[in-house]
Image (cartoon, rainbow, N blue to C red; front, top):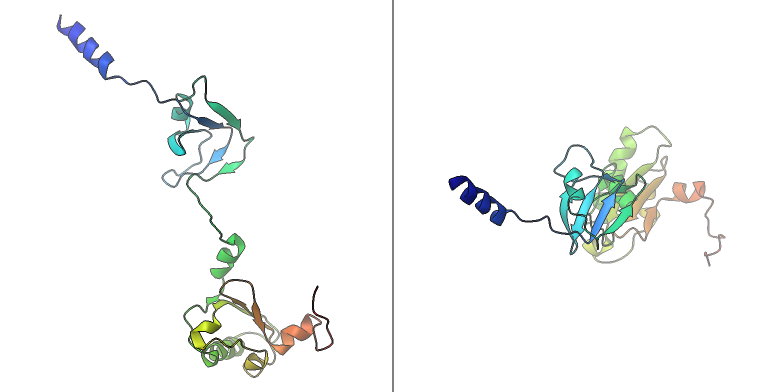
Length: 181
């Protein structure tokens, strides 16, 4: 009798796998908690139910199956408006976000120019003229700091660049260059 009660208790406690709304298969799914990618993912109500082989148990008759033919998937990676190339470039260049003056940036450029071979580009990111009163800087602000180096500094939003005269010359831009359409 005890074995029957035990089996009945097990059966009563066993829950069927929740049926997924979506089953992603044949993918390279990178989850932060896993060292290697898995090939399947079950999703219900916009949330990941299971990854890997366990995801297949959540397939039901109404589950939509999506074969990604080996494409990469990053669950929960949300990019509302990031420029991924720029985020990567940030790791390779000086972040000027907290600089409080044109003079401070010019000093940084001068220091970089002194350490770099003549003609090497000096690149940095994230200057913000609102940190020093709102006036946009000019090429002249950088010319004396790096006369033998082209300088390219992108603004914090990525929609403007601050360059010196040598960078403009190398780009073929002068006072006769027409404004772009």
